[in-house]
Image (cartoon, rainbow, N blue to C red; front, top):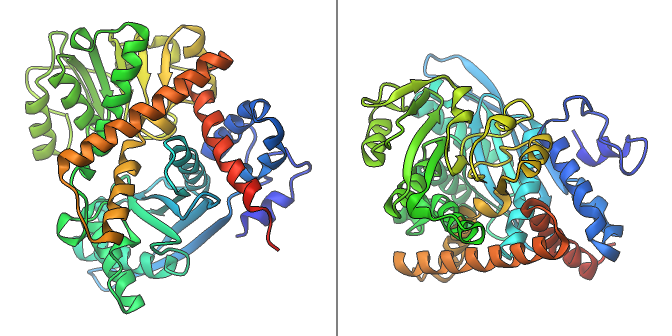
Amino acid sequence: MSISAASAKATSPHALPSYLNPDHPGPWGIYLQQVDRVTPYLGSLSRWVETLKRPKRALIVDVPIELDNGTMAHFEGYRVQHNTSRGPGKGGVRFHQDVTLSEVMALSAWMSVKNAAVNLPFGGAKGGIRVDPKTLSRGELERLTRRYTSEIGIIIGPTKDIPAPDVNTNEQIMAWMMDTYSMNEGATASGVVTGKPIALGGSLGRREATGRGVYTVGQEAAQHIGLDIGQARIAVQGFGNVGGIAAKLFAQAGATLVAVQDHGGTVYEAAGLDVHALLRHVSEHGSVQGFENAEVLSDEAFWGVACDILIPAALEQQITAANAHQIQARMVIEGANGPTTPEADDILHERGILVVPDVIANAGGVTVSYFEWVQDFSSFFWSEDEINARLVRIMREAFAAIWQVADEHQVSLRTATFIVACTRILQARELRGLYP
């Protein structure tokens, strides 16, 4: 399917593409709404704004593999490159049973915004396979990964598009992707993916980078609203590399973790959950479910927990118009991509709850991915202390610039982030011009 062809069927340049249901726009529709909100602030660059509303390239692939029982199975895979005006595409690959084209398109676009917001020399891309990886053996998972990599190999590469881990993918998946691409190229290409094992050119600090970025911008935002992190109460949705690491760092700074929700359920303790014990429990059991010395709450009740900082670090569209009124936090830090719908965004804004948007809050991961990419090209690797220091500096500088724009225009941090990022993207587009 050609995205540009589908877009051309729209009745006007500003209409939603015909394959979207306007009553349920999905992630891509939400992204388009966000672009519409920022357009009035783009000045003369607004003549290029349609560039942001159309992915540069979208590839849909069939991924056939032979299962362990000898039968054949087919899975649908995607790789979308939203924009490459500022550099090669950059973005993760997720394996999830609910992956859709709309979702991958939106995630690739948010990567464009995220990379520009922290001023990395990358465009935005994203990939995924519609599969529940828990149903596959290790051998089946490897065959799936390698076949998918071969199928999208025509558009990825160290200077074209660099995948990375995302939901249900990890260092091992990246190792298989790197090896497959390298075998097809006939030479080792360590820079084709990031988030690799250290032994294959991965970067120190990469695994903790997204959670560290969430914590860093949380610190900065807390100072602006007069919130003492050492006295703060934290609630986290999702307790993996993002939510778990962020919770650990906040706890080390004196904050109290009172509630955690993941796919297994919700646990709560007003006096504070033991973060390290909970991390061990999740590592051993795969979920917070069954954690001792904690009260079990319903999933809906999680949103009403009294806290100062709420960190949604799971999947998209978790905070909606249906639950935004329940939230008691002073600040929401989006560890996940697209966890808040535009309607919920407006409700939180009206209630005086500060939202630190995903496109800056969770940019720590791609920032250290950039460090990894640079180290792979130079074959010179930095210490973890150097990496963490560089990450914190970039995140603080990016947040300060965004806060200044928000203050200047009296807009939300999300709109301010889009103003900064979209301006940079469209300046690059205008300077490069159109060819041919």
